[in-house]
Length: 195
Image (tube, rainbow, N blue to C red; front, side):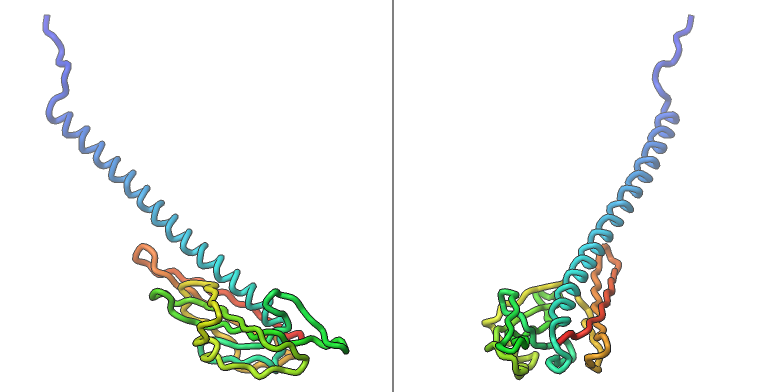
């Protein structure tokens, strides 16, 4: 009686090894694709979140301002606000809003990353329209703490014409390279000046 061969031949072992290797390679590619997709999705969501939060800040600040108290420059804007640094409104003796601060939004590089920055300065409360500082003056004032609203901002644009009866359009565009590919997000808002 002849005993059966209990082991695998060399050919069978090579075939099984190559099948295992091909399946492992396919599984690795699926995992790599999923990981890349997750990284890109997270980066895109982070950009979208920062953009929406920054547009919320801008919309809130600008809607309470006046078209007459607004200056648009190449990479930013400066305008007056009736709120103080504690976000409170004040009226004068005849019920008029008192202008209490100046707000600036502009682009600036921070650690090599282009960012949308917000700065605010308290001014002497007055119902009379204040004289606005230039954007460069606000930017260079080191006593004002800058607040980074969004990172990777490539463009921060607003309309050239400012009128009280027409909504003012603002566009912010962010772009970031993730995994060798650039992803961009654009957000827009329109603001009516209420004062």
